[in-house]
Amino acid sequence: MKLEQLPLEYQKAIPVLQKLEHAGYEAYFVGGSVRDILLHQEIHDVDIATSAFPQEIKALFPRTIDVGIEHGTVLVLEEEQYEITTFRTESTYQDFRRPDKVEFVRSLEEDLKRRDFTINAFALKEDGKIIDLFDGLADLHNHVLRAVGNPHERFHEDALRMMRGLRFVSQLGFELELETVEAIKENHALLGKISVERINIEFVKMLLGKNRRAGLQAFVETECYIYCPNLSEQGEALLRMADLPEVPLKTESQAWALLLNQLGLAGSAVRPFLKSWKCSNQMIKEVQALVQGLTLRQQGPLLPMSLYQLGETAAVQVEELMVYFEKTPELTKVKKDYQELPIKSLRELAIDGKILLATMERKPGQWVSEALQSAEEAVINQVVKNEREALLTYVKEQLSN
Ligand code: ATP
Ligand code: MG
Picture 1 (cartoon, protein in one colour):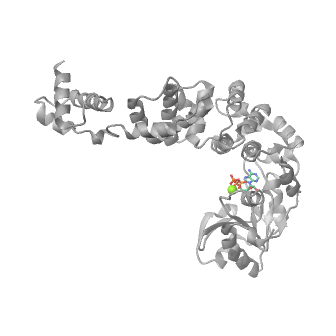
Picture 2: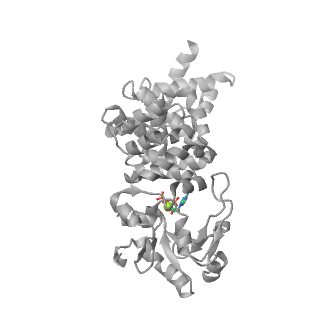
Picture 3: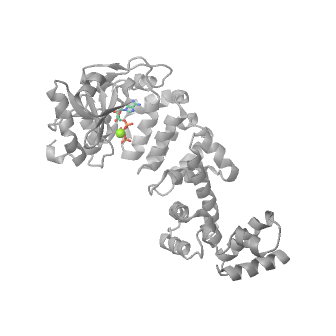
């Protein structure tokens, strides 16, 4: 590989590799970004692996942070930040999960052997030379996902690798090599031992991938879905989702909302489902809004009050989801409709609780918030202008009824 072909992020990191090499260690670019460069795709992180042990890395660079020193990872702060990880093996595995012990080694080969798929096991030297010990270049060329070494053993060591394989099917449009897919089919139940948090990350990446159809189909065909939270009975629904138009989903919340829609879950069923997947409360809130918006939108264009309650971002996301229901999203119209709302939040209402208490000659009570709510709705629906006097007259009328 020619040096000029390396992305800027890599070029900038070359002095870091050189520094390690001048001190007598080996150092390489490794991991998903090497794969992505070879695929001419954008990279998102620069991972560096070295024969230097963590203390030796720290002795070489003036500014470092121990981000995962027990796993051999040191964050080096230069012009940019780099995660530098000592070559390691993950020899002893417990319960089909992450290794319970990592061992630092001086050999690149040992480090590459522990990686999941051949296309993730390249090392790239700072002079542009690619180290390819497992014929990953051929697999990359043929669009094949092949486990490094014996797939059974590899999935026994860490069952998450099966989910990673499925998400790469979706992200890259590659096919799982025969022995690899057979090993997933035989070992799928081991996923039950993996923490939901780790499965969640791979599952979401799978849903967001460009080749969602192939990813979901493989997820069902290998029966991995049976060992995922609340999906064991949902094979058919997942295949229905695979058949939706293959337009990439933009956000994680849209992915969950579309999934829930396909599973026929809405309202109070949303929260327990997402909780079982260990989604954050923030994510749950966003998805609940999208699911509700989607239900309303499927009955017709969103009314002003729904637009107001959803907010612009969620309303646009709901509209984008219409592409999966054979409707052309009318994003410009939704944005315009939203912009034309007389107010965007209660704070913009021309009256507030204080004003009501000062003018209505009533004791404080429940009526205040009720009056504000009905005034808010009247303004949104353009029944009353958002002006103080008009609103006070409106509230007085409401109160006397
Ligand atoms: P992404 O582009 O999403 O970051 P990635 O392949 O870089 O994909 P990471 O989770 O960032 O995935 O992992 C970096 C590298 O570490 C992988 O390319 C792979 O070589 C190795 N790796 C990660 N997880 C595992 C695992 N569970 N088993 C074996 N190797 C792994
Ligand atoms: Mg990565």
